[in-house]
Length: 103
Image (tube, rainbow, N blue to C red):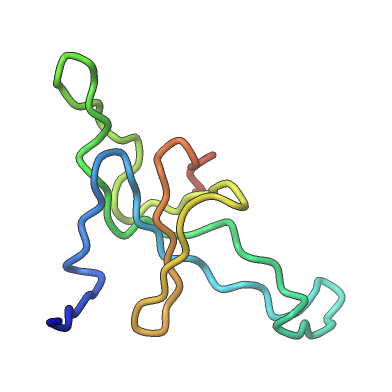
């Protein structure tokens, strides 16, 4: 079996999927208490790294995706597939799992 080298620049999501780099979780609380790894929550904010071509409609055309590469987005807590590449955390989401863009 041949080894496949995957990196972020070669990954292209299909359909209405969006590839997001997960933001780092908070290291300490607002009161200054340091959090151990087991107490940290999974972040729900990330930066869009790649987008698919859009969902295919019944007539064969594609509907455009509302986000673009570089947008910061808020996504559902348990959505998508978690992926780890080169030590960084990513999530592959369907466009419907994105709740909002963050300014």
